[in-house]
Length: 272
DNA sequence: CTCTTAACCTGGACGC
DNA sequence: TGCGTCCAGGTTAAGA
Image (tube, rainbow, N blue to C red; front, top):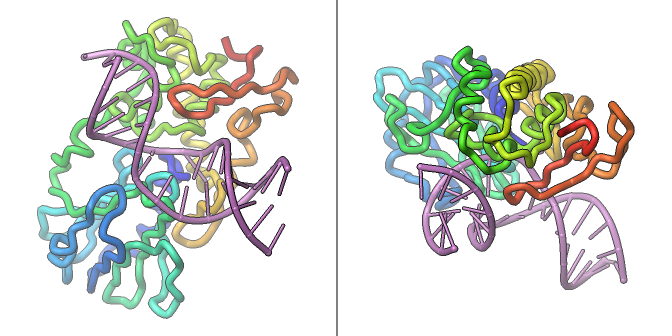
């Protein structure tokens, strides 16, 4: 579910509920998600006030007032965060509960448990954050940067733009969509990208991420933003999940190819 | 260093 | 209804 637009939608949904709120208790209901969870570190945050919620790539960071630690959350493949009242019944896979002093709770729900919850240094020196690439919606991420980083690379361009140490937040859906719009085959060796293609790809990555954020994210399976609304960007997907169907542009059947262990849908005619 | 592969997990869809 | 198989939005550790 969560690529950059879904994480950003989550951040925006949580912000009005969490800013200025104080943590009463953090309950870790499983010993580990992607990695071990640390009860002691979580307990040290009791009584602390949330001052801001930031996003870095697909990570969420809850900043805490007067503390040199932050809460780091990753939603993995199936994670979501919801604001609930304490009397609401716990669902299976509600793994982390942050109880706030105003009575509300934030629950991290993650069936596949590929997500993560940790207390990390507020200076973002943690290994998971330290080596992240550029934010795709920043001016830093431009055609020249993409072009330069692809030189000499033989791996597929789709894998390159999904590499979080190059550019963050782009996952399987938006990589597939941006490559379609740019007219580039997903398995094209990254090093063979022309400057013109780099320009187009950069433009469409930014465009699609922005459009998806404005639409409230893509709803696949059960993605729900913290206020319970569903995103509706899925209605505008051109190739992702469309294998076997006619291309919306030229009617050629959309093909599916496994690239880097991930399903990759593309139009064999529109994308070269 | 670059690249590929397997692994971590559960649940839903589908075929028989 | 039930069982087996396949697939899924991400990431990284290990191996080639």
